[in-house]
Amino acid sequence: MDAETEKLFAHLTADPTGQLHDGLRLVDKYLEAVQRQHALIFEAWRQKRYERALVELHFFLIAIDRVKDGIVLASSALGTEMADHWGAWDLSGYKRARDHFEHIEDRLYGSRKNALKRNQEYGTERTIHYGLSAGDKSFRWSDQKIDISEGFLTRFLSWATEAKAIADRSI
Image (cartoon, rainbow, N blue to C red):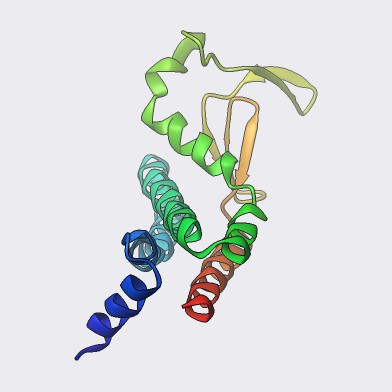
């Protein structure tokens, strides 16, 4: 029996519903995408291909959300330690950033229910539809901001790896 089949049997023994296995598969599949997309964001940025960097950022945000979804799914089968782990880090800003890309028609030109908010920046009031900030390696939209730096990536990968370790200890 190969390692993947052994893992499947261990997961299904611990959780016959399949949530644990499916959740951990999401984590495994999308962790690689998180790393790849992060590299592609900054590669495009260094080349001054800012529109391309934003496309790569969108896929980065999708991958982050899928990793989180996998951890949440696994936690429903594993209980407290895993639930405490995923609940300890608020990634809702990353989900809002992802939603911003996917529903941008709701935000352009101050339209509809999710209109952009004006904010103060450098003493000037203005509206930021979206943009990358080289100064602190962040993505900003409206009056919100998320960290997309190498430091964030390192913390995120560590957090997801720890979730996988919790799952392994729990089975």
